[in-house]
Amino acid sequence: MFIRDLLKQANLSFSFEFFPPKTEAGFGPLFQTISELQLLNPTFVSVTYGAGGSTRRKTIDLVSEIKSRLNQEAMAHLTCVGSTKSEIASTLDELQNSGIQNVIALRGDPPDGQSNFEPPEYGFSHANELVEFIKDNYRFSVGVAGYPETHQEATTFPEDLKNLKRKIDAGADFIITQLFFDNDAYFRFLEATASIGITVPIIPGIMPVISVSQIKKFTQMCGATIPHNMLQKLDSIRNDEQSVQQYGIEYAIDQCMKLLEAGAPGIHFYTLNRSRSTWDIFEALKGNGAVQ
Picture 1 (cartoon, rainbow, N blue to C red):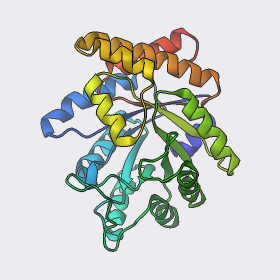
Picture 2 (picture 1 turned 45 degrees about the horizontal axis):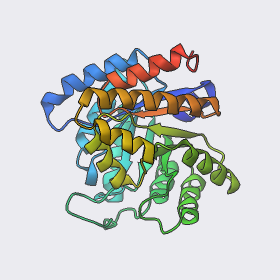
Picture 3 (picture 1 turned 135 degrees about the vertical axis):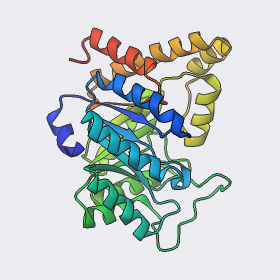
Picture 4 (picture 1 turned 180 degrees about the vertical axis):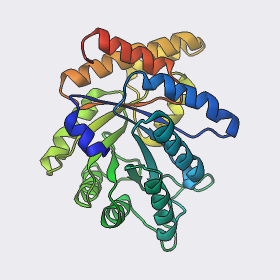
């Protein structure tokens, strides 16, 4: 089913993101994690596309298996990096033939060893071009990324909003945000997008902290910020893995509760291929009445 239709039907949308494992041996444990989290009845799950399209085959295989074995609506990530239009069309054909109806169209990060994005010859330079190509040639429901704290390559917040509007005008059906830890950034983002005529659902992306070094690396890469008080707390417990994970769960519960109370259409969890934190957060939301 198209995610655009699921979002219209659902009172709240809860979705989980996974990434393909590096080795074939990792598929069994990952599928176990996905199966466990399916018990929470997510609206959909998504599977990422590695830098430079490095996991293209694994992404296709994983979303197809999720759809066929679990009968779970699955969305594939698709990037402009390192692929010609014909190669992207081939990927879309294969996804469509596997029964996948949803993709998230991204420009993508430069491959390892490259600091800047280089448009591939006979490819796409921007995500809005990819969205337009998909909408002109296929029947997928298409999501795009949004950046409450501004894309790291954008010179200004207004410029980044214009880029997002181009993706919506090209036919994107919904937005999933980059991770953030300050809810005010999301609410400011909603006001700003509404002011330029963006009306599609904007689903906040939440990443439970499980490692201090890891979350610092992620936020540096994507331009998100860690609030000062949160950073102080994490640094004080950084050598206690269990305490870090528990604090990450508690912080995410509070963050999600406040987002939902303020009218967010749901939550997209960046699971890091682990079930425990996401499960505990979801159960707490149910216990507090935020999830039916």
